[in-house]
Each structure stands twice: as structure tokens, then as C-alpha cells.
Amino acid sequence: MRRTKIGLFLVMCVAVLSMLTACGGGSMSNVDPAQAEKTVLSTVNKALGTEFANEESLRNKANVVWEKVDQTGRISLNYTMFAPEEGANGEKWMVRPMIDSDSFDSDAMFRMVAITAEQLKNFENPSAELLARVKRDVEVTAPGYKLNAVCVTAKNIGGSVYIVYVTEMIQK
Image (cartoon, rainbow, N blue to C red; front, side, top):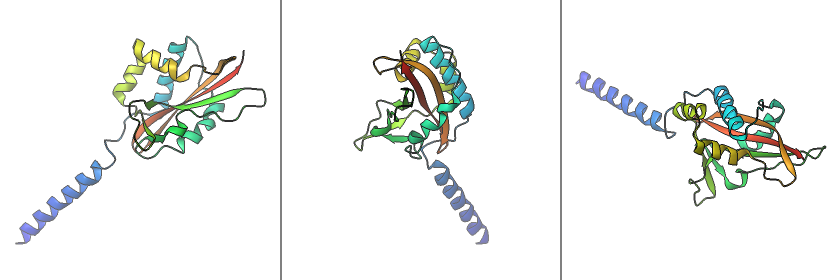
């Protein structure tokens, strides 16, 4: 009888542990956010034909977006392209999370792209399609402005690594 109770207890423990680890929609990311930033920035430079360094002075501008990402990597439509105030010298910034454009839900939320180790390898050797997508994500959209600086930020949220681009534009 005692063995049966111990066996039943162990089975219940395993069941509870498996349910707890299944919460959150997947396994923990093995992607280093700093490495993701470096690799994605390299792809940005390839896509644009530039040699930008990751402009650390722009990093805090991404916080307005990072604060709106939930633990499953979803973000409101309102924050998929955020433009903070204009700078004292006329510079403008654009803050854009890397989102899955096919993931728009009825609650006006998009799912951000969780960067996996496999996806990071794709950024190391980007296809023409990936370069075009990255270029579209970071190119200047304000008439009369040109790209001056870029900051690629990555963050681990809920066990997944996500990307937010910050671009600084100045008048031509």
C-alpha cells in the first residue's frame, strides 16, 4: 500500500512539473540578446549598404515599446511604429519592433518575432528576402530625411528573445 502511494505521488509530481514547464508556449531561448543585436545589426548594414555601429545613445528610446510587450511577445498595434518627439536639432526617431505581420489578432495585437538560434543563423547569412524585409523595417519613411544612426535592441521576455529597431533620421 505504501509503495502504491509513493508511486502515485511521484506520477503526480511528474505531471505537475510537465504542466508547469509547458506554460508559456515553448522552451526557453538559448539566444544571447547581445549576440542577436550584433548579428541583426550586421544584416541591417548589409540591407542598407551601410556600416552603422549600434548607437547606444538611442537604446533608451526603445523602452516605450519594450514596456508594452506582454510576456508572450504580443504588442498593441499602437506601438508597432512609434515616433517619439522631434529632437532639438530637428532629428526624428522611429522605434519599430520586429513583428510577424500575419499575426494580427481581433484584439489589435501583433506577435513579435521570437529570435531562435536557427533564425539567428539566417541573419548571419541573410537571403535576399530577409534583406528586403530588414530594409523595409529600418528604411527612412519621412520625406526630406536621411538615416543617421541605428540601434538594434534585443530583450529576453518570457523566455524568448525579441528585437526592436531604433532609427535616427536627420534632414537631408
